[in-house]
Image (cartoon, rainbow, N blue to C red):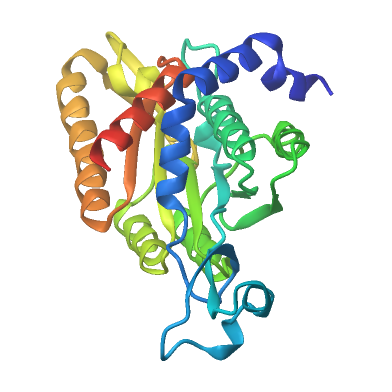
Length: 298
């Protein structure tokens, strides 16, 4: 399937492999930091023995150890260390935009998702995929098998961002869908009213889920390199507007800075990781820098 090969071509695999080599210890600590805290008797695996003390449940006594030692020991359990990840992809028409970069915002998001999916599966953590526009369109159940990355990319390769989006509604659907504590990795340009989106993100976070928001813009949307009279098109409504780019640039860049700062501040207060990116950044370097910054904060 040629579209899949676009994201699995040798240079992309080499980029992901380099990312794995350079950030392996960071990723391990990053993912382990997201794993569930120990819960006695819930989703558990055997950890170690300790001496029986009054108040312990007699059902936890290891009678085989008692037979060998004539002493009472109980099995100590801890929660499974795996965390379930969901790659959540925005399919709005605006994600298909690119000005001069080789990758559109959606293709850039696919490369990031491929890297994160690869790293999670390498850690034997299950990862799934959810795509949305005005509502959830596709949902691929989480798996930790090595074939899962191919399944994720096969699905993504068939998709073309088109139409309108409702990010907040889709996130509320996802929050209702998740049954266990999960890692939600959202890839979007966030070109919508921020307040409902932030409320939906807080709802996810308050549900006990870890959230990473990858805010992906095209380089032109960040730099605004246009000169003279230009025609701008609103990506979802397709309304057009003619402006003098030179006089508009200052106001535009100030609005963009305020937009990003709003997300940065609100996400920080809610314990959500906000990662602003643009398509001129090499995706493996951008991801490594994020992981490094996360490690420094933890």
